[in-house]
Amino acid sequence: MAKKVFIAATGQNCGKTTMSVSLMHLARKKYDRIGFIKPIGPKVEQFGDITVDMDAALMARTFGLEEDIHLMSPVAMHKNFTRQYLVGIISNETLERQIVDAVAQLEKKYDLLIIEGAGHSGVGSVIGLSNARVAKLLEAPVMIVSGSGIGSVIDAVHLNLSLYREEQADVRMIVVNKLIPGKRDDVLSYLHRAFDHNGQHVIGGFNYSPILANPTLAHIGHLFRLPVRGTDEEKSRIIHQIQLGAASSQRVVDGLQDSTLMLLTSSRDELIVTLSSLYHIPAYRDKIAGLVISGRTPITNVSQQILDDSGIPYIRIERSTAEVFTAVMEDVAKITAADKEKLNWITANAEREIDFEAIDALL
Image (tube, rainbow, N blue to C red):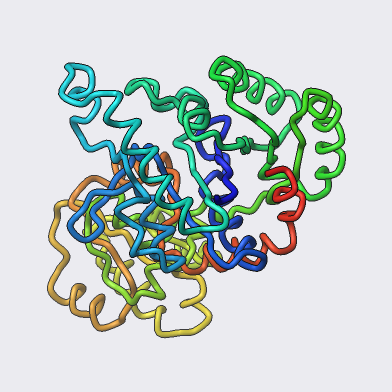
């Protein structure tokens, strides 16, 4: 029978998927066989001929678990899923059976099974399967991942604990992510005081890094459902700055910083030509992560030829610059298997910042 851990979170963007990737990487140094499942999948994609949760697809592709993909996302919530559940087309009993059966099959195959929840404790309640309910259904010890802070973490964790207690799920640890390095020990010491006496062990997670929060050009393309012109390496490059190409070409060039994504309109021929020409120069190639060219005005033939010949990565979007800028700034980058730079960062830093033995001892 496999060891199990249910990875939950206090809310969105706490680093739950990052923790799943980290545990998978670190556990492989100790265990021969490590499996993964995302019981409830609210964000789905196609994986061959089946629909699966995005995180299940990420883990399958990253860690070579493709043969298990039919088990790794037993409840993938397609567009009309909740409506079908609420009118009785899909039953709670069926969903529970699908999850329990998938976990049972994976438990027979693996030494450790990582079970990733779908967000805070109440996510999934709309189909009768909150994270707290699923954790109890699977009798899996729970790890709650939170962001950093002291008061905010204590408040958020207690809010989530109430539902886990109602379901009688076993919450054993709290992993605190996005810690400021200079405040890490101080923050963790106060959180130990707040939770250790309740039976929840506090463990430090990752220090804060903008690398994980920042998007790639491939992610921007996925956001707008548009193709990206560029190599796989260019598409997976992490964007550190987003700049509007509204000033003169010279001022735009002077303002370029490391790995800048430039948003500009299709009528800015001189800026398109300038940036395309500069992309041939190594110093500027480091600064220019790519272009997002917006607007319904066609790019002139000459500018288009220079753009294509330069090899500069870009996305062409026939929407206003204001719409594009707003969408990009409000979006939160979700890690995918194509984000090699991010995945390499996660695994390298996990070995320095995550105490897997402390986590494993609590399972």
